[in-house]
Image 1 (spheres, rainbow, N blue to C red):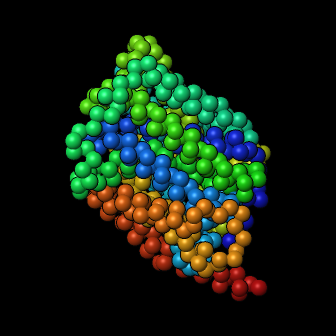
Image 2 (cartoon, one colour; image 1 turned 45 degrees about the vertical axis):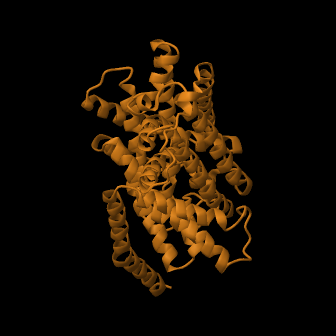
Image 3 (cartoon, rainbow, N blue to C red; image 1 turned 90 degrees about the vertical axis):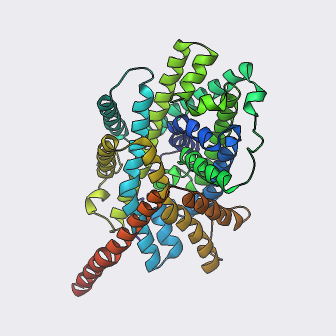
Length: 451
């Protein structure tokens, strides 16, 4: 496989890499999913879903940390799947990753933009058409902001991460004065009865908490632009997961201690409602403004990371050559960025937020998350003596437990989305064997005939 980092600049420090991860992880996700999580678990026991999400992020983060430190190149999973399997199956899996990314990455962009426009309605009354205009305009604005050198982006990311962390600290700190333990820990008698219904609720709630944690691996997509990647990639993953987990758990506990779970589950603007109840409408509007900045920050980080995957595939000869183009002066994959922004703009006009959230996760579990974790086990077994700059602690437990949790979340998801994800994989497999491989064989044959 061709080296994909030669034209990219290693300009991101540990602080900047961690900041990009953290603003990607937060976004609008926890603020719009929190009521859904409480409703799925029907009470403050929903904290279990946040803990399960954090555990999965740490376990899966160990996989990403090991692979990212070994192969710090643009493209992340695209590179990893080829390297760890190192055969025809690995090439197919990497193609499936790019194939899915063309669909799910713009969906991630759309989810952030749609969530932004919905939360904006707390401040400004918007019709459904106006909400679509806002979400589309936000995608265009962020694309313009990303059209610059990676060092400038790193500085912007640090500023956005400070706003994100400061907002959470304000939210958590404000709750101490009004904290009611009887509300926060008012478990019903059957709250922890481990019945099939309990596990279905936990699975559906965990799907949404995992969505809120997604992004801890974004630094791997930018592997070709990280300074000292063998050290900084693992550190940035674990620092961002630990920091965000503390903020999410603190947020959930404080809000649960301020109002009944039924009120939380029925609120469309839970953070705004929380601040209004604690302070006044003006403070609630100020907090809403900060949430909108956080949502924009996440979109910024998402588009930055995902734009590197088609670029890596194109440089490697497995995707359209035009995606391999790099801006001549600013050294970033401008064509890939514009594609992600353009398709994300279209998706933001077409889809509903709740459907997008479920589709994003179910589509990625088999190929990317389970595929990588299984691949790490295979890589250790097939090449036990190969050098690993970072080796996951307690190997192989993190990968095995992670696979079990991923499959639990997948099979407790709505069946139409599981079927849709399976259909997309099947189409990708057929494309690979009947279109991509024959084309590669023809190119190889033509190259051999000219030598």
